[in-house]
Image (cartoon, rainbow, N blue to C red; front, side, top):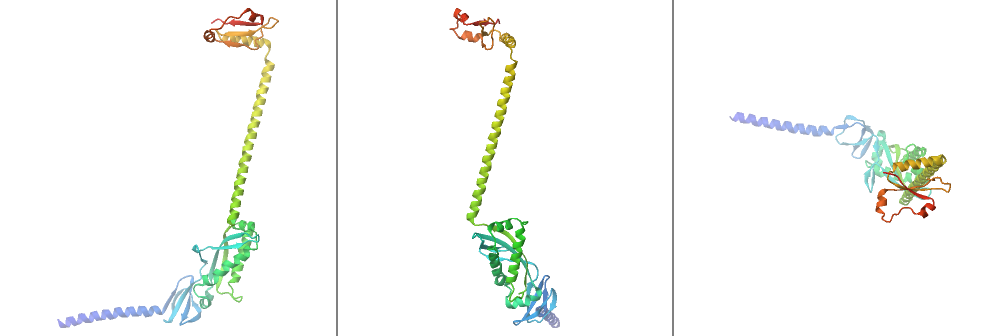
Length: 323
């Protein structure tokens, strides 16, 4: 029994030793290994001494006392720490050559040169965006904005096909790239491209533009109303001319014989009506005008009297058509 207990205690002790050994190996071994991910380089720092050579992507064995600082060599966006928070657009306010306050928003793409990463680490540090990139990205555009008038800048910002857009973007790229040099030498930051995102005029000019657009819309509306009125007037003229022409045609086609026939036909159509027909001095009936009176009208008018002799002498005759 005692031998069995000793054997179990010995087994547990060996297990503990094994676990401790594994932990130590992993801890110590980890300090001997550096893994650099794709798109990065590893800058080696041993007690403040920076090695000019870098670790390329992959697995590397190193001095356990050497720290490895990773620098990305991939294309990166410049993030501007501003009042609106970190954003990949830098907002620059400057005066145009007309003295107008222009706000230009630009985006900057860049990458770190892997071979120059040790020098960048020694001279600037890991926070190189804020230390060496922010100032040129905000200063250079101010100088370039001051060369142009608002119309040119606004057109370049509004249309990607504007010929001045590529020209201004090239000037921005060239100016920022040169500003990042030190004594004519690269710091290890290569600017790939600069893009104009937006150009905004001052608020006073925005208000003027809005007022002008509103006025132009009102003028267009008034012009449209005038056109409608002109068309309506033309329509009425054409309509009046048509009526006048029709009346002229009808007037020329009305003969006395036709009017007499039409009068008699109308009298037949209005059976029981009373007609007053003028008779000329020649004794002929002239039914150019007549007034039909229905029997109900005669009944309703209690004061109605038959035509007198004086009526006959004036040439007015009362004829009642039989019902």
